[in-house]
Length: 132
Image (cartoon, rainbow, N blue to C red; front, side, top):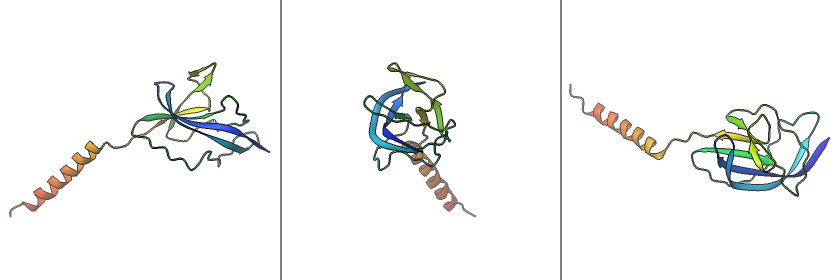
């Protein structure tokens, strides 16, 4: 059986143990095959062009006011997903739930890459100056 409805996918800043400020969001139609659990092949919204810098963000699947969706998400998120949160009575709560995940991202800083590059150039230059 397939359940369909409108949902929102949103990206939030990290507010510590719960999502912070909303950065991006989009509404999409979720067509989810249901047979007692969520379809692991479902990928959600697509065609997004959201640029995020290095940092920690929350991705949230939400059913907002005026939207209707009947769905389930897998109980165990794949790596690198980390924390869980759910929103009830207007505030975020940290618990085991499948409506929001904290995503950790490690992106090398430009300064670090420049230092690594300068070190490699220095090693190459030193190898060329060896006198026998």
